[in-house]
Image (cartoon, rainbow, N blue to C red; front, side):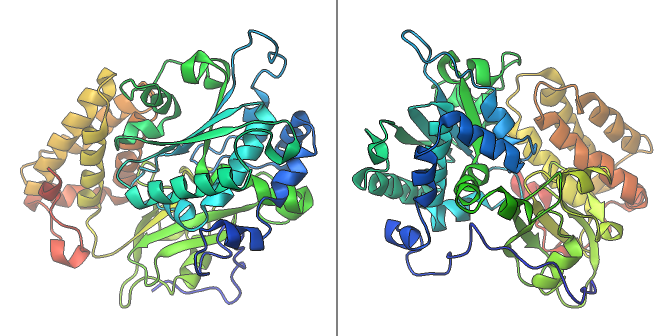
Length: 444
């Protein structure tokens, strides 16, 4: 068991504050909770002033990289709106695919109008008249919920022509992707949205210069866009009162795995895992924390010694990992770290788009080495081979998928080398039923 602190940091329900109400997804419910008031405020401002406000707030992208949202918006050329100028586009990345990440889907299910209002404000700020929400095709209930909410917004005059008698026009399209992990990478998403194969593009040019249809484009995560209306409505000082100086505000942490109360916990950036575990009633009864991911399976593993690391971008980076999507997967001592990392590696090998050799070939050979380790047919050189191939992937593949595949391997060998060495002698010493992980062959 992990001891809880006496007074954990208070949770800050903002996006999730009315998720437990009946029909929280409806326009009527959203309006009762100040819905579309921030839009009225934004339409009374100049677009450049909206960008400046978001930039000054310090809002950082909630999709993984943590890039400053206002800065990204400011990269869109604002002086090319005359005759013959290229149109601007807003694209919302709702292709939530990172193993362990489950924050955007419940947000879209429970309060889709928060995303729509944020999209209208963002589009107004960057002078875009067309926005796309790119959603994974498998999540049919989310697609239906979003499409219904968009229809409600059109009927209420929040979308379409002359929104709020401001002269601003905006159309929103909900687009269903085919379910490829690589389409979570923003340029692969753009290729898919254009009707091509989802593969990452060479950068530069960046999407702000040549994005969708080679036009200036902003690509933001669902939670990032949904966080904009509360900032406009409540002000910069309110937003800065949560989180840290470099990572201000609230965010959604997804706890899953061996915890008593898995789910979404909306808290200030900088809260610790120890505090979040206190809200989740701790690790399951009779067990103790072994390792965890701070931002999904593509981030380096951390252990129980990192329980008090601030879960913000600087704090997690300071211990050699990444905050990523804030997908906190919790594993207790019954879990075989080699088996867990093997399953993630199989996922990345399956989801590699094949465009670059390091990722296409590297992830394949990593799965072969893990198969040998799991069955007790490994050799003394296999652990070093894992590290060598990971080094060939990290920072050398075309996109960040290679980094994501290498990170859990490198960190797991760093913290659990003895467990890897035990696999060389007899194969996996753990009982699959005890760890609640099916044999990896089930994924093949």
